Amino acid sequence: MVQGASVLDGVDGETARLLMRAGPRGAMLDGVLDRLGDAAVMGGLGVWALGGGSAISGGVVVWLTVAATAGSLLSMASKDRAAALGLPGAPERLLGYLLGGRDGRLLLVAVGSILGRPAWALIAVTVSSALSLGLRLWLIRRSVSATY
Image: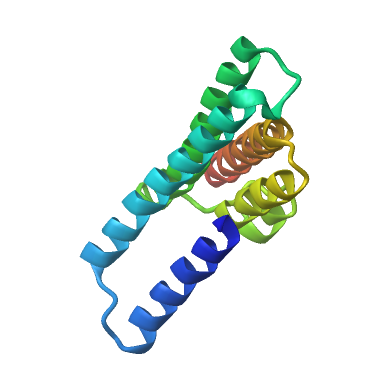
């Protein structure tokens, strides 16, 4: 379901652009709904893991759920904030190899779900988001420092 929703989200955006109906309101709504969807997916994984889908203790699962949700939100927020401030962007193709972007995170969730390992999916999302965020911030800082 997660991968299907991701595909439909992409089709929606491409259709709006092809029909020349894309605009700032739609982009804003899409971004907000993506973040809500990400939080719901991470929460769902946490509930699944707490309900017996994991051998990891409940307290650790809660922390993993919070970390995965925060990582998902911060990863995209840092990208959007850098663009809004006119900072040079990080090479997103390079960061894509870390699976820290939205599509990569959803792939990690799908694989963890197929394998029946919700806690492992939360760990993978947390790690990939943290690495992606850290690398993005480092690359932006380095490029800004080189400019001044």
